[in-house]
Image (cartoon, rainbow, N blue to C red):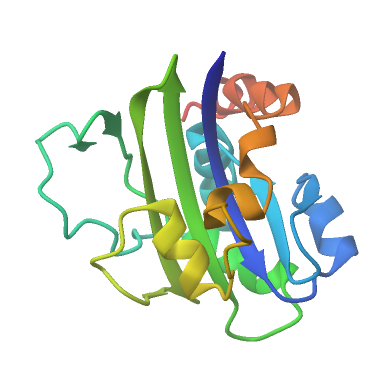
Length: 173
């Protein structure tokens, strides 16, 4: 069974009206952490709608020309993600992680980074457990942070994001 997610984990309270506005589904992980799935098409669409420019500083790791880190591909992450998190969060300077998993049958990879607004909090972070620790997660006995917040149960992104492929085509993106 695959484990293939691209998501943002936001720390702190959220604005439900803005979640609806940005067509996201909130997945509560803990009392303080909420996960939001996204994909490259979602990001490109909102970048176009909001006129966002530029990319978050994500890649200190050794990267091939096609943005491959280990066994996964990490596309440049638009600054629109930071703007959306600012609007969804009830704080001016939201703290959040961007996470990617791509596993099948135990083979694959993962990647993560943590941001406060547009600022990378530790460019050396590359594992999801490291990112979750920076967000304040303490692993439960005999579990790691990934399992503690229930990420093992989230296998793939939601189908509703598929519509962003068509929306990008309609806008010539």
